[in-house]
Length: 128
Image (cartoon, rainbow, N blue to C red; front, top):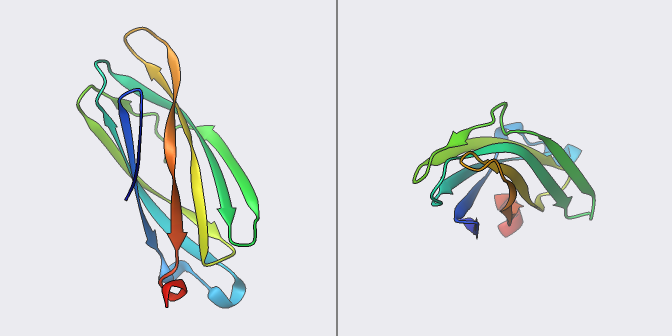
């Protein structure tokens, strides 16, 4: 598991190779990732936007930006957590992602960024 803490917001990531949706002969590798966001601050927060940096083993780089995550802009109350699962396709059997979330403190309206830790996605066949 990969973890980072920013402004008392803990972001943890677990990754999973998706063999049923991957086609190695066509350089298409599908990965899923589960993210848990824990609000250990004193105020409720809302996740407004995400910004991802994605790199594969060939050095191809992509950026993905957008509102919320998985179609939601969740409110996370203090001492609560929010969990979601999403996915990423790569042209290689190994790659990495990292990024940031734009959050709003619902008590004072201030915006702040939370770090999404860099995490590695590796197909099991790569480990042999």
